[in-house]
Length: 303
Ligand SMILES: [Zn+2]
Ligand SMILES: [Zn+2]
Image (cartoon, rainbow, N blue to C red; front, side, top):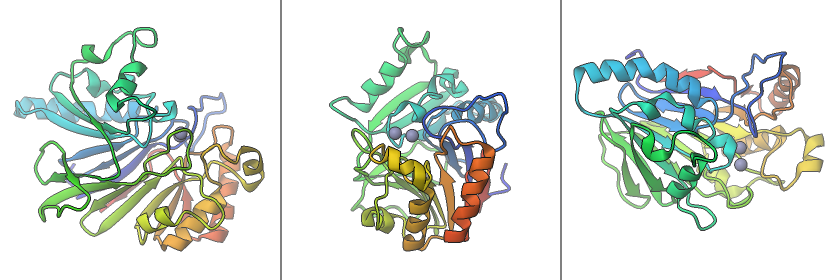
């Protein structure tokens, strides 16, 4: 700890469902989960199965904090949308069970249900033995909209929410902007831009980029240092799966090029792709956008 000002780390890179085949995988089998943190502020993007390993890593830090302070340990989780591959790890996230943890959960209200109602459904007694009120952590639920900017100041405080037109305080730490993306069934997804000082990371998963690219998303990602982009399909596969709400690696590269980002991370890997298939995709992506690489579990980027 303390050897970075800001850290981005991938804990889950697959789409749709976790991969648990007997061949194993060096790319990683867990579904969407990304950590974006400073030494004091912890933000998690999505709670796919990757959040389970992240939770185990956070436990010693939470216990050490507890020894020194009575103040709660704040963790913020922002959900891109509420399809199961983005939240299935939450009930197995160890900090959920810890009494001195305060979880700030942000996600979209969809199809007439509040975000809290959706998360409560996930742990209804018919689906899971521990219901939302039985987890010992404190939880606060926020319906996320594209007018929200979630930000932190430099201490260990809870996140604050500003309107997108508001001026943020200069002493802020991480700030997260969101946009609503409409081409994902059945109620869209929420790409996010995580900013820390002059660095920008854009997390655009579960987006289906059509030919020419979505200019709103391209503007949102303009000149990002890292663009993490949906790349579920090959061009061949896309012919069968157009309308499913995911992109090809070709359209991911096109978006990266148009947005003039520094680095592209291919994400939301097709669970039926082997490591070999994925390395092949990476090779082809590099021919289109040289600074492309596969999102791999454990990949880190620090400032
Ligand atoms: Zn997904
Ligand atoms: Zn989805």
